[in-house]
Length: 259
Image (cartoon, rainbow, N blue to C red):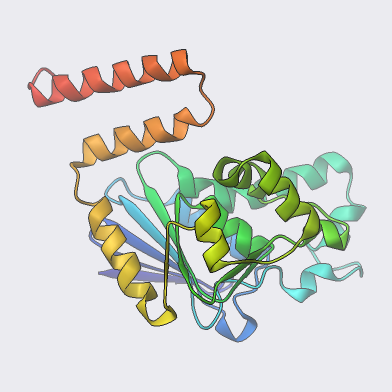
């Protein structure tokens, strides 16, 4: 097993074979996030090796992530990367900075891996969007997901809206976003936000079981199938049928020793 720390972003990683565990490691602040957190997460994605098949994302302590660090809300000049700082920048520069923040989230659905969020306690705002960025979610019974940004005069801007609509559909996503209400674990499971809900003390075991199941199929077939499932969300049927044909021919050629 190999491990590493990104102290400025409070992100810890550990790799065991084909499984990379990424841990938000700021438990005394309920894993509140800052731009340094997103930079650290993006760096993990940038350095991801081809040997990694499953990424497990978790939060140390009693909550997955309570969202933005309070310093991000400071209106005072000098809080680099904070909301006040972004609001004072030219629009193009502010958008480019947010694009960079989003990189810390988007890599969790990159080709070649399947990502799992292990969520306990609060997953609020940026924390909720980080959980939504993963392919799969295992929730403890005490988990609560919430996107309060509109109630604060903001919008979810860390890849949350597209992922939420994919998972629960248009009308549910609209209601969850605009009301900012919490979604408990049982409701999350019923609407498709959670794949599994377990008692808090069983969270690690449930994630381990799911991880082993994901590692079961041959790597080539697993990655090709995951790519098809991802593309099916946006492709029309004809395009998706063609993608399936291409992927299957490649699989058959490999099995037959033709490539």
